[in-house]
Image 1: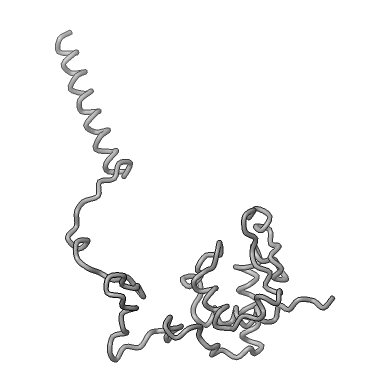
Image 2 (image 1 turned 180 degrees about the horizontal axis):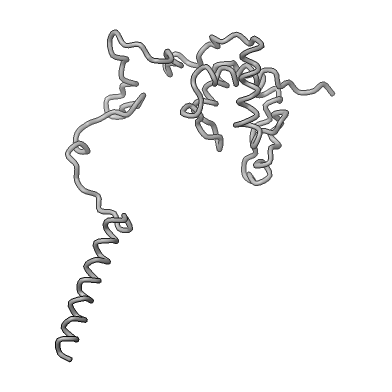
Length: 177
């Protein structure tokens, strides 16, 4: 009987140790280990340094971005390099249908299926004079960086696809009344 009690105690201790190990291994309790990389100054992509007041780090000499530079923040909104031809508008319409209709609606009126659930701030009416009066570069920046509840889509679309969306948004004019 005594051997049985000792065996139960050993298994109980092992079970507790195994449980504690599993809690740490499955990140239930996270331990933030000090990493020396965290203790040195660093810059994120296009990050503004608050201490020195310097803007984004310059592009390395003799480097060429894969897609080309989309925009440089200090220069303001970029100029649309993509002509609003049939190909661009067709691509933009397809991208709009897949990614934007849920919030902005099929005609861009801001009445998509998700809009009913957004109580505090509704999606923008892309046909409104306020949106249509924005420059192409400003619309490009909103698509890239987001605005209000709209998420940034710069990781979802290539630079060319964002310009195709801008060209398509230009076709969404308010119907005359």
